Image (cartoon, rainbow, N blue to C red):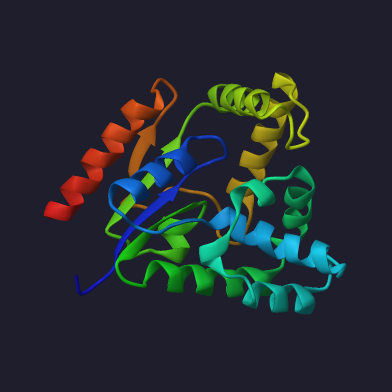
Length: 216
């Protein structure tokens, strides 16, 4: 293999893109990166060291020190870290720093599977495979509610369906409406609506798309 094989997966919260990404990474023996965790990792580093969340220079320094290959989903999933990450993620130079690291991660042989909100459009516009995974807000809220129930509400998120649905709609509006790297499908992305699919059906469809790209 002379060039990295990159699978870029974008989509809104709770669409199933993370699960699909991990399954595809395992199937093709590729490293996986949930780019949302990179912002949480910066926030976690600042919180752990007692540094301010509103100092961009300090946040950029923290971003430069993050090892993208050693992100712990269980640690970074805590609600307080997510709240802190939302403050860090709006800083332009933090985004620039992390995007460069994400690009380096993807372009290291043998390649990688990356999921997020701007992978196919900004981070890996030349990826061999681009998927845009979505589902209705109602279905995504239901999945998130079930996920929280299974965790025993350890994440600290209120496990009320209507609250979750409202939060998802607000997050969609924020992600799709932001000026910097808005959430949207890449022009050449394959749309995968998982509203009526279980994970195995969605995985089979995604797997077919990837295999077709390998033959091209």
